Length: 233
Image 1 (cartoon, helix red, strand yellow):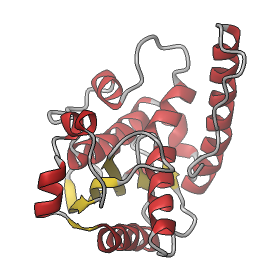
Image 2 (cartoon, rainbow, N blue to C red):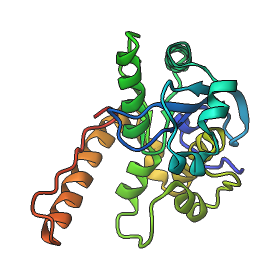
Image 3 (tube, rainbow, N blue to C red):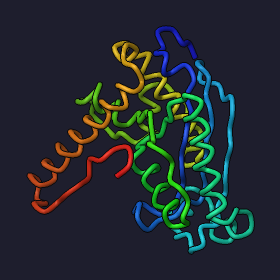
């Protein structure tokens, strides 16, 4: 990748992704995880990956997405308390090194990790921050673009390859490269200190949630609510 005009916060990034048993952050469990580091050209400098035995059945619908069955998780996975502690420690390490943590739809992954830590009496990830969420940033800087905002669709829009979607490692690396591509495409982001960018995402996510809630209520769901809390709900 050409890193011309890349923001300084995008020069070296930590990347993070989870694959899980479902979509509810309060009840679902981690199945796979990736914590890595990317260099300025998107090259992978470091990577750690986990397969986790979540201690519960993995629904078939989830297995069809990420490819990990209950049987495989039991055979190959680490016990959930051990894995969760290691994932939290790995993220705390990159944060201590001053690296922003990139996660696509960060409020899902970081909230679920926080819930898992509490479940196993593990100290949650401090902060966390600074966090870079390409989903929140992309919606803020290109608000009216039509089409989906999935990682696959957003990666395609920014010219980032994602050959193995829903693999935690592939998704984490793609999210980091999308963040770097956004920084190149929107040079105004280069002038924002990463702590300030984190703070702006708190506001952007709240505004986006409020707008989506209003749209759903205006289109036949008057009781619909959604949380705009970020990066942990």
